[in-house]
Length: 92
Image (tube, rainbow, N blue to C red; front, side):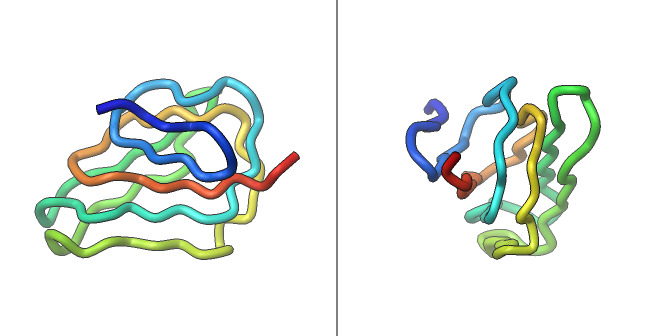
């Protein structure tokens, strides 16, 4: 698979640098991690951890609505144990 990063919704299923540019994240959902203990790690362009999550149950999505209304300077999906990450970006 490959990441889809057009428009204001990103669909991420492949690790790697998503963007080196600043983005404003307003919502993120990690959909259907396969097993308990799967990891999700996102870092900014400086290598600082922005989000680090661990699934507590397989098949259960994790959503962070509006609690993430913040700018991120670069977006790097470092670890994705399973599932898909959906990210809502505020329009510039």
